[in-house]
Image (cartoon, rainbow, N blue to C red; front, side, top):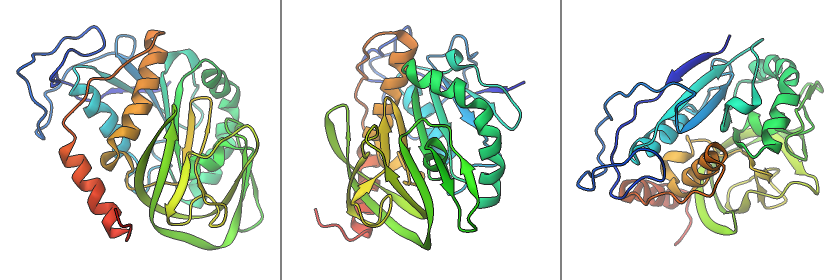
Length: 288
């Protein structure tokens, strides 16, 4: 059986939230932890499926889930997280957002062979409009497959039209891209550390254009991939704390899946997040 957890939530938005929970207009976003609020998956505003949290959680990728939970909480909304591991079943209609982080090569091999047993359910969820954010090893396993440095072929689940092979050296360093989602373009910054060379097929489009760093293969100028509402990326960090626009696009997709209609998220005071973003871009040597 899968295990269901709940992230803390409170009500900290300056405007009414786009759902069943109203917030006090006098409340302001702060950095202090939100008080606990119990929320079951069947009543949560967003239901997140965290795949293989024990095996695929390097470079602090779990922090992305904390960002999802907090940004919902500031708007008076709740996130329920269901952890699904080796040998456990995925119910495609029970989740609005699917998350998979990066892992060591050994763990990725173990996960790949288990993940194919969930492939049909995951493809069904994607076809139904659920949101996906799969990072590093996640983008590789979302594709057709991955050939590692030893020549072993790891199966993918076919969510993204791409294939990956290991290169002869790792691509490491700060990564800045111009990302385009839903017709809007914004700068996204993070960190990359991968040996994979990922090539996109015609059904997938790049998440963004590389401004600084290597991206998918160090040559194409592309980073990440998007198909339906499935996003694969090599951006670590975790990526979402410094990129609130990116986080909110994914959350809006998840909320639209949950509600069955369009969602417009209330704006938050992201001055601290934007300051962190600018520091990271400056560290990368990108002039603004």
